[in-house]
Length: 96
Picture 1 (tube, rainbow, N blue to C red):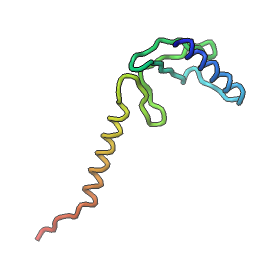
Picture 2 (cartoon, rainbow, N blue to C red):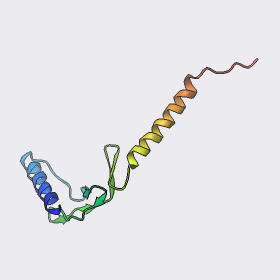
Picture 3 (spheres, rainbow, N blue to C red):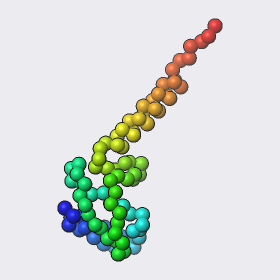
Picture 4 (cartoon, rainbow, N blue to C red):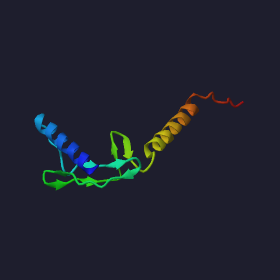
C-alpha cells in the first residue's frame, strides 16, 4: 500500500513539474488509509518528509478515516440555518 502512495506522490510531482507549478513541502499533508484503518507512509518532497495526519480540512470538507466528522458538522450547520429561517418566516403572533 505504501508503494502505491509513493507512486502517486511521484506522479503528482511529475505533473507539478510538467505544468511549472510549485508544491510546498511545508503546507502539504498526507492522509493514507485503507477502509477505516490508517496506513503508515513516508512521502518525501524536496528532500523533506511530508507530515501524515489523521484528518484535515480541504475546501470546507473534513477528510478523515476516523469517522463521519464532516457529515455531522454539515448537518449541525444545516439544522442551525433552518432553525433561523424558520424563525424569520414564521408568522409572528400579534399582541392585543
